[in-house]
Amino acid sequence: MATTDLRFVRLGRGWHPELTRAADLRGLLTLDPALWAANAAPLSTLRMDPVFLKGLDTDGDGRLRIDEVQEGIRWTLDALADTADLELGRDALRLAALKKDGEGGRLQAVAERALTRLGRPGAAELTLAEVRAVRAEEEARGLSEAGLALVSAAEDAALRAFIERVIVIGGAEAHPTGQPAVSAASLDRALAEAAAWVAWVDAGIADAATVLPLGDSTEDALAALEAISDKLHQYFLICDAVALDPALAARSWPDGAGADLLDPVAATAFLARAPLARPRPDGVLDPTGPINPAWAEAVAALAQRAFAPLLGETPITRVTVKALRAKLAAFVAWRAARPTTKAAELPIDIVRADLADTALAAGVRELLQRSHDAAVAFDGIVSLERLILNQQNLLRLVNSFAANLDLYDTGRTAQFEEGTLVVDGRRFSLAVRVPDRARHEAFCKRGTLL
Image 1 (cartoon, rainbow, N blue to C red):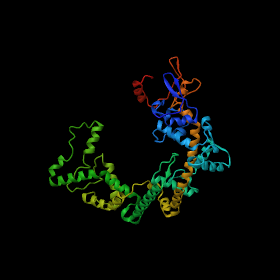
Image 2 (cartoon, rainbow, N blue to C red; image 1 turned 90 degrees about the horizontal axis):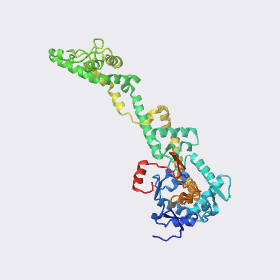
Image 3 (cartoon, helix red, strand yellow; image 1 turned 90 degrees about the vertical axis):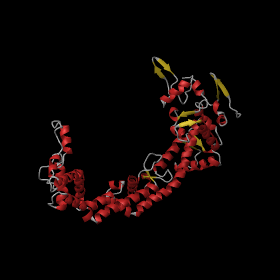
Image 4 (cartoon, rainbow, N blue to C red; image 1 turned 60 degrees about the vertical axis):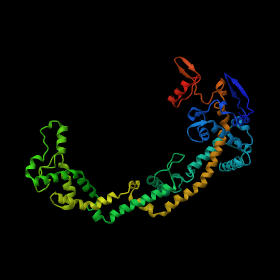
């Protein structure tokens, strides 16, 4: 076990380190993990600044571990030359307390720039509230993350609208602020999809007479044919059989003897299975003659929306159906080539204009380039906020994590205590948050405390 200058006090049946000085924090860097009061804790169980806790949770798993607390201590002590404010838990950073080299020197420069930005150049200290105001201002500029740009990063309305459309087409990139962002990859994806969409639309326009023989109604004609395609095939096959052997006509209709036609469900199923009409040896389907009621509307739609406008007053036969398909073949092929893209949700004229105005895409790329420098500056502000939070909270944290001194002191409250629980007329002064009840119960069964 490594030696330490920590002072210990006995509480109950255990020994706890006294943690009141910066030197005590340094002692925790070498303290055997077996002597820590806790090995880990969910962030949600600690009543502390969530940004402070998130800054310590370096692996982002929502749990705080000994090595993460030690790393936070080490980083803080490496940046501070004067730890008096750390021991006081102040939420203001004196620039004179920073080391002049390494991380301290870097944060000194960041703090000086922040003070200048706040209109207080040369001030001796910087508060947490002031740092957070600078951070919020920087985030609002939309370039706080390298390689990403928010809509707010654009300085003019046209570019902002373009970025919004890029996000619609190319998809939103995740951003720490939770707002949708654009990246070089999503911009390239959006431009490629937009170009493919415009090319597809233009292909239909260029050969409209063949591809769209009925204009916007071509889709309706094809839908009418596809809706009844299987039943047409069935009808023509039965007509072929009857033409070959007229005696088969009597067997071409389903036997309804076993069906309860008084039952609406059974009657509906019977008609749905029956042919479109009584089969004819000549293979003609006459939409004006007796038609199976279940399919009468579909047959009428085929005649009115497809046959009449494309083939005129032509009888419906296998040959004319084939001719109808030939008329619609170019449309079917064009429709099959339709790109799957969100660009279809936007007016085609706007998509065309976005592609034609190359300055828009260039503007986004310029923002993305600027984001790398802006992110470096933003990271400095985040580090400055982290240092002030650590200065304010580290000693409070370790007294509820490395030791339980706050728990045993009736005048103080540990960071994991949630107040008083009243149950069955009794007051329980020790109440803690349990984010995973099943896991907690499993641990309790193996322990002796709870």
